[in-house]
Length: 266
Ligand code: KIV
Ligand code: NA
Picture 1 (cartoon, rainbow, N blue to C red):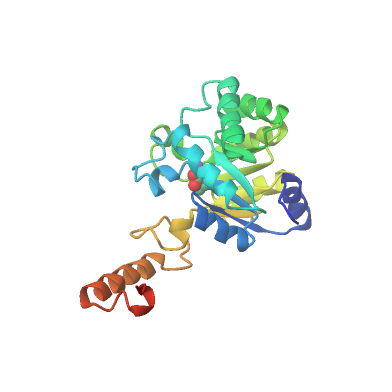
Picture 2 (picture 1 turned 90 degrees about the horizontal axis):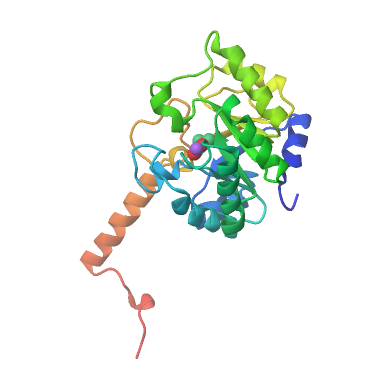
């Protein structure tokens, strides 16, 4: 496949092929993940935490995210690039969501958008998909609603499971091409996955989702400190960069860099 389209993701689900999504916010990460064959990249509003150093995803703006989405779409040829709609840029009305999504499509070449929420977002999903904008939904724990959900907590336990399944079905019915499920009990996520034709993408939602997503700085160990339970570390980029910075500084202090080969003759 030269270029991943939403229908390829449906076909993968039909074939039982699982796939991995990563966040990306800049040129070299995006180009590297494209080369690795990652089929879908999300320019997440998690850029708020991972690029702009905010405590939560809430402060990041459309104007801050657009240049990141543009960098990622310019640096990739195969992956489907999804732009996350930030807090406050789509909840008020379907028309507001449309105006924001159009900015990401026209100014940054996004191929799709993602938004958080269940039943209240059905009109948004419907208007956008009717207008030709593919929408990825996001249910379970939705970080933009952290203050309403009482912090980082597993969603869909007990009686809330039926509601989660109904939400997922309503979002599929409204036209979403995929649904992210964050911090949902594995058996509930499995039920949702079975009930939907569109792929489910899990983050802290167990093995039975059709796909998985992780924030790249978490899974590559660039961010240090305690990671959420759902993160698996595949590299120690913090260690690699720390050692490289120290070695360079030492070389300069000791007169080992630059050598003749890095210098110009007269
Ligand atoms: O912003 C983000 O990184 C996300 C994923 C973790 C799903 O929404
Ligand atoms: Na997000």
